[in-house]
Length: 429
Ligand code: PMP
Image (tube, rainbow, N blue to C red; front, side, top):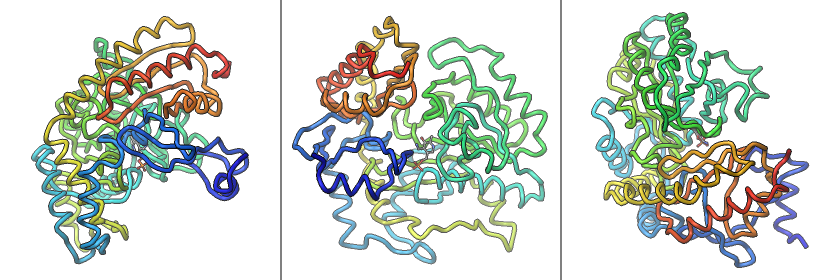
């Protein structure tokens, strides 16, 4: 029997990427702690997703909770127009302390997608201020940058969540995605498609936008750092700003604090989100060079015309600050090293399974690419029955567990994937 709350949910509440008439099943979670989610019936399941890359230190982290509690009695929110507060100052100082010197002008926004909108507005306004008609963005296939309009316009037009909307969006340029993977040798031909598009359109390109190393929802592929290195080199050569979307990869997930560090480059515009607050609240940050900020700001009477109501929310800033303090203590490096090692040991042997096409592991990310799409409804139930929370999409079963996960819990996650792969009924052939 379905309880009243679930019935209400079914009738009235939209869920991410879902239907109102035939929604996927939903699970009521009453409590979350560490790596555990507690279902309404009291059963605890192990979280393999970190709530979509965000809850890196686990749920209900005592230090993050204290940071929130301490701030809430001072002020949970106050407008940012004409006002500054200590949580924002502290957070921006912290961000500057962990970023390259060149990145020093910070805009605090609401969510990952909105940060992409702002980064793209910044690039457009930069060229407008210089009196140049540069309005097009260059990116690569298999990319994903969020669900708002400009963000969707740089998502892969076919292989993303947004192919339906592409007919309504501004037209941008898409180079072939690189074939050289992170683990294999670099094929110098990989840059050709990007290079050609750049050379043929450089007079109209406002910026290049990329996810660094890991392409998320567009296929969970890990590309070679040399690709990013060469792109940055070309951007420098042609004076085109490079926007790096670290929303998913930032704050240690790939084994580096930021994934662009694998390629030893420095972005011109950087977008952070998701794990910025340790997965407790929504907050994003766009960080630019002084040069970009000055060009925009010196073109009077124009200013950067963006200012969300909840800009610089003090609660979110306070908890983000504590999140970065935890990261600065450095334990995450050992945690990610151990997670990667264990994921490799336990998942790589699956490559011999006839349903598995590829297995990719980098830092705290594991991807099992199957030959067939999963039946999400069935596989979700299957995973919950096996005591784990894993939410695959299309042909991809992936893990991004909280960094604090213990070996036993991680084995429960990988074992559940192994059982799923051996259960042919969970796939749509
Ligand atoms: N960029 C990337 C790489 C992402 O993974 C996401 C979120 N899945 C976004 C942007 C959008 O972030 P948000 O969901 O916070 O709007």
